[in-house]
Length: 597
Ligand code: F6R
Image 1 (cartoon, rainbow, N blue to C red):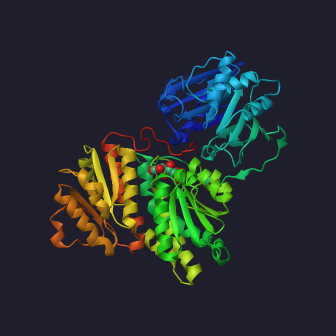
Image 2: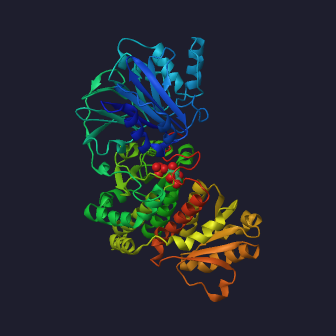
């Protein structure tokens, strides 16, 4: 959450900073701001709202040589100009932008107030600006290090000092921060996507590492103030230009990309099968598999656990990362732990990984971002090959995650039971035939949903997990209160909420469960529910009279149906969101990368 950008060079600084921020807007868009250094003075511009609000009031300071910028997802203090970053020390010597949470800020603020510092914001970050002033010494990087030693919690910091031209000071603990340079310019960002097309390689700061960044020169330090050397990371995947092309929104583009991503997964795993490392040698000691994630990634984990138990017959459970961390989970060195995270930066997932490692588990990251904090910590990486996902609501990454988990479950079965599942070919077949549903068929339903306050998704088995994900998508970008229920649980609360005309979406893709699911659906219809059924099966005529609409799904092997069915609901949420006048790429109060607890 929150995005940081820094720039040193001879281009128009504010513009460079804002262009960088636009690429990081997925990290938060409550407010934005820049600070630039010119003639020994720091100039700040801040705006409430997203980057376009900042862009409108930018002064484009000429002759500025260095600047830092920030897009905020509010943690401490409401979205407002006062709370927007950068924050400035009382003596106006230091400006700082921050991603993370300073857990001991209350105590630090009290101490600073006793020393007559006054605060102009409600943020935790402002303590850093005043601490820099309080601890200021000749050696500025030393000042930064001393300040960071006082901080508890997580931070990525970019800092400028009005007396030191052409320099940005950087610090990192638990929140990502990257630096890159060419001969004439130096770039700083929370995500290396900002360096695409500008440089060939970049550096990644580790926890409690610091950097003094100048033109053509980066000096790295550890917490003791000693210089350290770091190796650059080659840019490979980031040359992709991030734009919406002709799509109205990133979300639409990302849903439509799904079939091509599945093809890319097939090719990648054919060329270099990341599962091969999980061989008999490792598996002979494993008696349990756990999957851990948040939000959509958690739902992918639920589907994955079900695949693993079905195919590999190994006990598998999925946990929400924030619960896992505090429930003293029963895991040990016989546990294989899969951490599912598109970004690889979700704080709870990373902390859950730390716990699993402490308990001796073998760990895997199922992630889209191979340079992410999570990817750096695990024993093995399964790339999801989805390419940058910008819209806040995850779509293509989910479909990629469950596709890979489907293949992995079959790989485990092959290794454990000497079977011969050709899992790559079955996904390849799906990838070559999958079509994202025709928008027209969902238009009418989405028109009806715009006035709904409450609606439901019901399903059994794998379909129930699809219901959870479909319901989350709808909540996130339409603000409709939607709930997913196992279709066998309807008598336990759900039926009390059904009113005349309530939309109930029924996902029914598993033959053995079809009749039972339809029975539950008819009970809802008897109480006035409008049933919309998504299925690949022909519904018996006798059952049709109660059904309001059918969404016809393509027919694939049943274990692949979670991959084939979710697209319809991603699209439905998208269409409903845009009809309600909501920007689906930036739903209120949410951010894509949840880098704080
Ligand atoms: C939902 C969504 C979020 C993320 C969650 C985990 O559409 O995008 O719920 O799934 O924040 O993010 P990652 O997968 O990056 O760990």
